[in-house]
Image (tube, rainbow, N blue to C red; front, side):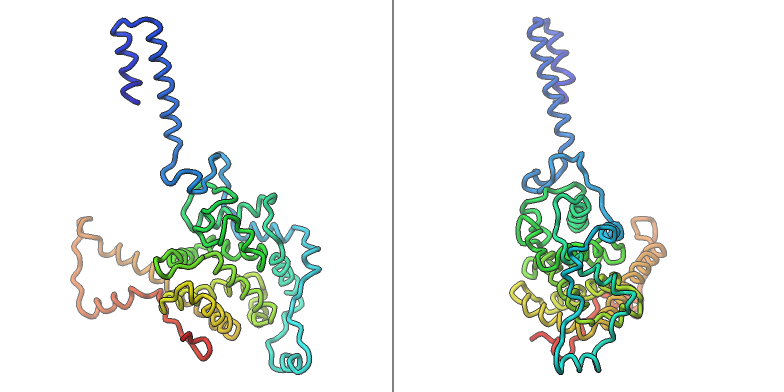
Length: 354
C-alpha cells in the first residue's frame, strides 16, 4: 500500500501516460488510503462477531464503581419489590422457641431499612433500558477478561466469564441484580481484584474449570439466605452496616470455595456437593470466614510490599547489580514466603468433603 501511494502515481506521470490512466491510478491510491485507514482502526484479537466486541467503538461504556451502582438503587423507586420481601425465616413451634432462646441476635432496627434494600435489589431483574444495569454488566466483563471495549448484549462471549448462555439475564432469576452487584464489588475493589483474577484463572483450567459467574450467583444465593436466617445479624450489628458485611461474606465464601476447589482438585462434577458443604460451613462460621478473608488480604498485601522491597534492595544482574548469595536460613524463609497467599483450608466436622 505504501509503495502504491508513494511510487504508483509518480511512475504513471513519468511514463507520460494519458490523463485517463492518471485518473485510474488516482482512484487506486484513494482506495488504498481508505483501506489503510480502515485497517488502522482494527484492534488485535478475534473478529467482532467471534469476540462479541461491538462494531461501534465510539459507544465505549465507562466503568462503574460499586458505590455508584448502589446509589442508583438507593434513589430508585423499589416500592413494588419491597412489598414482597421476606426479611427473616418464618419459624413455628419448637423451632421458633429454640431460635428465640439460643439463636443469633436480631438485627438492630436502624439497620433493617438497609437490609430491605438488599432484598429489594435481589428481586430486581436485569433491565436493558437502564444504563446503570448495562454498565455493571460491561464492567464485570472488562475487569475479568481485560477487554477495553464493549461487548454485545447477547452472544457466546458471556460464556467466557461463566454464564450458561448468550444472555446473562437467564442466570439471574434466583438472585436478581444482586447477582451482578456482588461480582462488581469483587472486581472493582483494588484489594480483592487479584483474588478475583486468581479464581477466574482457575475457572479456565483444563480439568478444574467451572462457570465463574454461575458459581458466583450461587454464592450470592448463600449470602442472601445467610442474611435471611440471621446468621450475619451479629456481625452487622457490630459493624453497624449490612451491605458491607454481605459483600465481605460473599468474597470470604468465594475464597473458601476457591481454596477447597483448588487444593482438593475438584471438578465441575463435584460442584453440587462442594456448594452444599460450603453453604453449611459458611452459615455456621460466618465470623471465621470473614477473619480468614482479612488474614488472606493482609498476607497478600504484606507479601507484595516485601517483594517490592526485595527488588529495590537487590537489583537484578542485568541492571548492573550483583545477585546476593543466600545462606540456608534466608533461603528457607524465601521458600516459605512463596505461598504466603495460599492459606490451607481448615475443614471441621460436616465441612470436610470426602
